[in-house]
Amino acid sequence: MNLSWTPSKSAVAGYFVYSGTQRGGPYSKLNATPVCGNSYVDTTVRAGRTYFYVVKAVGVNGAESVFSNEASAKVPTP
Image 1 (cartoon, rainbow, N blue to C red):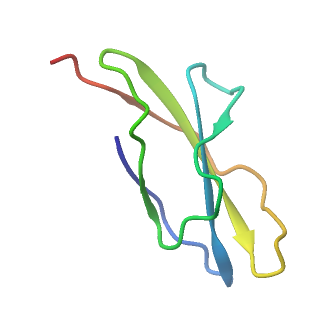
Image 2 (tube, rainbow, N blue to C red):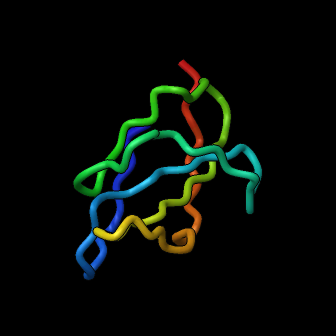
């Protein structure tokens, strides 16, 4: 699943991407280190399932933002 988001207007070190299978969470962190840029490919998805995504910005001081707004995507069935 190809994901992208609007980058932060503040200086950031990167982003953590989270996903879950229920609206509102709980969410699991997908990347161990912050992603540079504003895109990520989730290779853990399964066909026919709906996923809910949120992102946290990581400041240059290491502080994390609150979760972004939630977005959802359904993976097509082949």
